[in-house]
Length: 421
Image 1 (cartoon, rainbow, N blue to C red):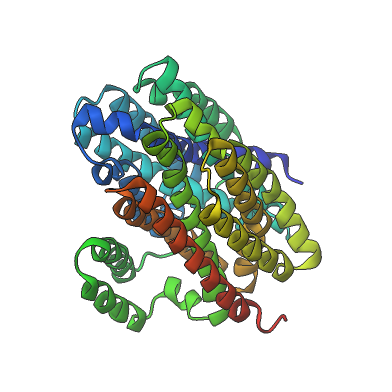
Image 2 (cartoon, rainbow, N blue to C red):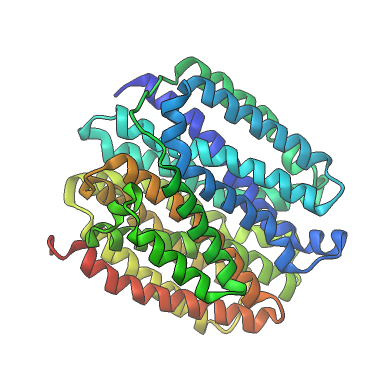
């Protein structure tokens, strides 16, 4: 296995890790933000949704940027942009300046994350493909567990701005590691401007339709599907579309839980930020550890059984969340642990399977990365609306929505693997 490739993945993975770490750490600061800036939870959630929106809008450009710019220069730009955003976040006195800085962080993450996966696509051997995909997911998947703990710890013992300041040394380490090891990928990808504009319109129209105009989404979707789009062409394969939609829904679940669980404990059960942040720690660590194992198992035994088992366990976890009488830190942690085990078991297997069955792996990777992040953004928007007025009812309604979507995954898995069953 190529040592330089591993070190390159670690450097890019660390940037992606820090991005998600901030994203999930901010979820336990909502009570502070609401009080400090005199806003509601919908506005506070902009720090997450705008970050994810920026990732979504940047990712379709990733292959084009790799083609146009030397990979190391692109890596340097990403690091500098991230550093600037951290400095702005640490000194922002106005809420919308903080949102702007988070948008810049999203752009940096939107370059780093697909670049990491493209490293695997272009440089990894077939023998280690599933394992390395799982390894990349592992680097990012550990962040949701550490994020709330990190944010809760900082809010208890330090100041809000330190959430950003303390990450600067890690960013410097990622820079030193990457600048020595990252190879130039040099793809032959040309930007289809019309396609990119349509992707942007589709993503934004869905975000708008969540709160305002539903017909806008459907009209843009029809135009988009009629367009001869390379990225969307990969999704016209029913198997690929179904398997990736399962992945996107899992991202929806993950971001929903990161908003629901700690904030329910803080707002409704009067836990402090640090205590409430522990609810996702063990589950996220288990999911992260299972990611490379899942990729390895999918290489050996196939993805169908892992994926089906994962979805059944997700359904069980949500039924338990709906029916537990005492929603204590321990009980919610156990339920989330069950869900996280299922996610770790199946996510890498599904992503590896989706890319393997696609004819155009680069555009398939762009499609997965782009819409996976957009579904995370939609989760934050939708859950913040459901959760806004009454945290007890909002909790139950949010879990019911996730449970409904998990049953939808059972239908999708038939179409994703129907030629394999």
